[in-house]
Length: 342
Image (cartoon, rainbow, N blue to C red):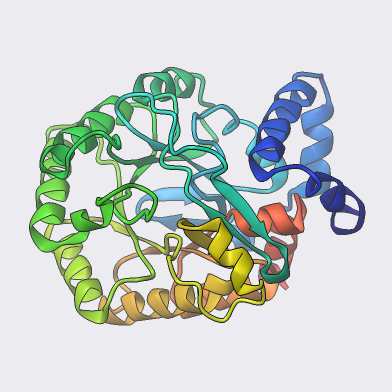
């Protein structure tokens, strides 16, 4: 029903319009008694074999919602009704910012993909912290943190540390996002000195806390082997707890969408089916390089149950959906969980 009726209607609207519509519809309908229960009955699946403990956190199943959908921590308490066991909010920055000029989100329907250059649009860390104070105990929430666009890289450590300190009491784990292609010069933070400075500041602050919260590094699919090795080495050296692999890509190779249309869209990070194989390659590489000792959240191009199984077989401990959720609908997490048990 979703792919043949609902999706064609939604895709008549611009991607950002659809996103705002869905956010408002979930808020409205889930405020009605019984609606969330019905959604959970239809779109979630529980089984003892799906449970797992990763970096010290218990998950009901390995399927989560990737960062970018619930940027401002508005919906995290509702998404278990769509089969997800954890939600990653953000990317959150210290100050509110509008992001890049519109239009900034585009569908490539022929490729089952999206291109976005949102630019960390969010209401800021104070708003996110306030929203997360209503978090239910059984909801696992990750905080994806970044820097404000106006903050020069030389001061990036301050931004990441501010978000880390503010969100520390209210999230279950952190993801350090230095690999988004939509923030000017952000990728430069992946080099050795910058990355070591950021991760060092976060881990030092963590040492002062009574409860140890996991810190993960989000990896770009566009890194060379040398840069990937460097990122893995620094993350291990700094005592990080795992990786999220991968972010969106700037590559436009092997797309079915006409080149003229791609050129008219311009810059942005590509997600969805075209990134599936590269994401899996990076997951497998990290898993082999760390001898399977560093947990990986696999994300990128998971459109079917088979895609999810491939990510887990490559070495991912958990997986996340985003573009697949948009293209395949609210039953995808349930189908993946059933396939895993089977």
